[in-house]
Image 1 (tube, rainbow over the protein chains, first blue to last red):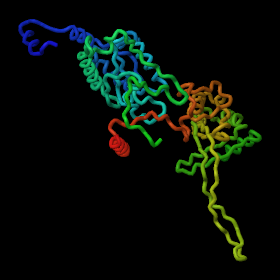
Image 2 (cartoon, one colour; image 1 turned 60 degrees about the vertical axis):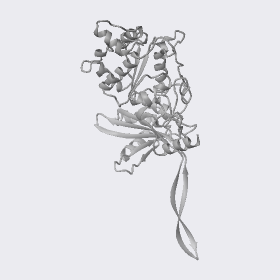
Image 3 (cartoon, rainbow over the protein chains, first blue to last red; image 1 turned 90 degrees about the horizontal axis):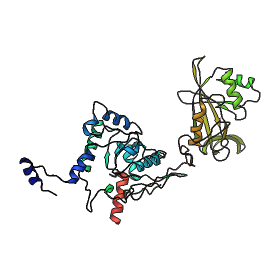
Length: 206
Length: 203
């Protein structure tokens, strides 16, 4: 990588030096197209963030697409029930790479207040990789914007070549995640072991 | 409500109606309908008594329970008759209950609480559907079927409404055990923290 001080020295002399990674990521991070779908009350805050008062257009993420084929950001805005979870995974599979996931709110992160229930998925990270998790119940629109900026920083830092390259840079990777099946008692499997690495402590008294 | 029960008995021969007392401060008593005549009673309530709106149907799970009672019996002790109080435990078999809340728009009154009980919690879990009487009961009877496993005979479309079709359990029953897919919080505390510490010491 180019030395930062050398870069700014050159810039003062009217020479702009950059890398392909940087230009490419700069373009991507400022035109994130979210998938237009909301699952619960967090969606109301997401709508507020997109509307005039908070104006997500300032960050280039205002083009909510009604089709997964045209979206590159999935904002999981709300409670993911076990009945809904396979559909969310299927939608994510239908999105083209590069694609990102923001888990918005306590429910999308962990199940939230419904964590000990029977019908709510205890975090969408059980089935798909989450890039940014925004806590809150629901998070305020500012928090969503903060999460969006964090995601932009993450995108800006992604490499396109080399051993540390981003997931989407591997052409062979179809980036499809197994869709869970409706089982007799629970979703099967209960989580995707490739994606989800649970805490080591497990309940033993049940 | 006693008058209403009497009116039902007079209008429908053989109708089983029992008044269930609510001992709480609300005093919201209810009518327990016998299953064979429940449909006829419901139609009578709607057409003759003005209970034209069913606002709510819910299920209740009553597992088998033991009731302690004191039985007084007389016994001869040393030639003198004495009353002896004995505590007796009685097993009450479990059953499922469907509870309907009826309102009357012409009478501007309600709710009239109507109940039906199944014979047990395992095989005989059927009650007659009241959807043909009050259409508004359709989805709520489906919900009671989904979550409690009460079968409503005569329901036009008895399917699960909230859980997926492949689901086999009845989650609102008292003996339901949720799948063990709940990890502890990332920042454990109290009993969980002790458990985590114990495991770290072992490892």
